[in-house]
Image 1: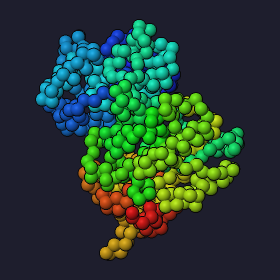
Image 2: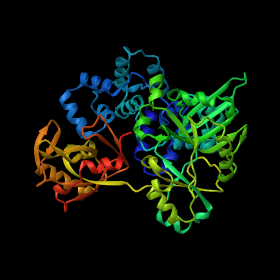
Image 3: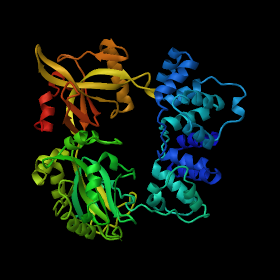
Image 4: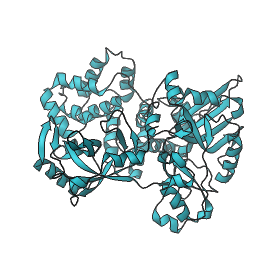
Length: 549
């Protein structure tokens, strides 16, 4: 366990990608099974401990230390695992024989819910500060060390001279502690076989396009389509050895999400699909209208869904690409050819579950820019609010897993902006524990006694360090009331700080007092120059959403 803890600590302080890769590869080379396999599982998010939740950790530390001291320490440190690891009382002599990562996993996975508190306490007693930190990160599922799952797989691939995509291809069929994977990587066994009739294929990703790119890219070399506000998925169908149809719906990271969308999986079992893999966007659609992302969230991350949920939030895949068909791997074909094959297949698919992402005709970047700025005027009609921008794909591009340069680009729409008034503020955690850095803002609406502010969102980023100091100073000097840790900032039409808020979209929400919910709000500018009376009204935001569906 200590070796794993030292790796996490080293990676957390390493800023270089190559440096993280070097450290991780060295660990996998030097560490025996099953420890390295469990470490890989932790780095790729493949571990889950049903009953080891943050509330349990808080209870355990509350039994060992003063609760008030812990609350103050947690507020200052800002990280639960780090705070508990530092405050846990050391027991002399117990650190002499720390458990290995494999032992820790064996203990945790064999413990019942009632045994778990005592088991975790015993493990914390046997580990030093760094080991306790790693253990808590492991069981709460949030390493947050700046190492992606893709980079962890790349580190494994490097050991045996393979490509990361070689591992991605077989990853969905593997399970911790991945002894068959490491046996292949070490050259002691053959590559693990992919026996699933509906396997996942590593996805191809895009780069955000920049202004200077348009100077070197020729518009005639590219095709474009809308970028929809859903989630990227891969729908795969095949036939098993016994003749039964198999289907899977994968997220872009290879997670099987079929259980949350059984109607898609059922449709894929239709013989019309044959053996195919479709790359597309998962959306919730009613009467031909694409619903906001919030509707899709009602079904994401569920292990089961009810018939009522399926009926109220019907799912559909908007197909972008065809990766394989009738046993033929199409990824080595140019995108334009794959698109032609997809168009022929889409004519056979059930329209209530699948449709084709339309291509955008354009002859110049200026023409595409006009479509990006006003989707409703370029064929999107009333579905324009569900469009995030445009995707630009080189017509001759092969389907290359990862994020290759120069092939696919995303050109997101400019964010929306609204001028709102600062209403509430709360201090942050960790480095921001002494500063008011979390802000609630509102816009004007008509009330019984005249205009009143109604909160429409919260933001805690977008500003510079200098602007944060200015905001903190303003909050301290203009506090009108307090509710626990929250300060109410004095705000009326004669006095108040206006914030320019940038956000990606809006949707109706019955859970919010204002009736709207923002996506990714952030503070883009402090409007010291603008009187609070001139901030925007709720009607301005409602107009961005359009009528309630």
